[in-house]
Image (cartoon, rainbow, N blue to C red):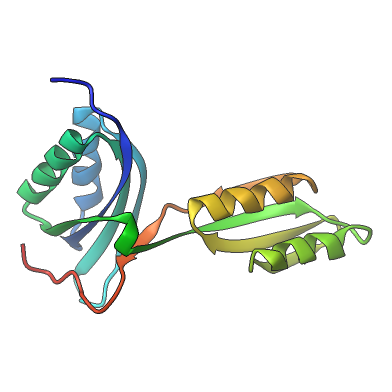
Length: 171
């Protein structure tokens, strides 16, 4: 097997909402040594069906193998590889930034530039909520670092295809 270039891929996986499905999916990645960047599980428009949005760093060969292995799981209804050109993907970030009376207006102005919003204000800090692509959130954090970041947490990406086409639930 030759070394192939590793790229970031987003998989959208429809699964039955059953106990243990996350364990089965993550075990598939762990057993094969694949680098799981993020995994988000959320309800869909269909009761009893969840969408897993999986971000993975893998070569083209390995992403094909991952897709085949996921499709073998009985609880998996459909696996779709999302391509960058036809995908809307966003992450959520909460960041607590140093902010007192002297610099709070500048922190709020910087947040507004990124269309982020202040969700909590304390005497010495503010908590800001931002959503966007990984590059937008990185740029936002670069600006917030000048004020001093106390804490931050970021979700994995959620993603959908653009346009009217829906994923459906048949394999």
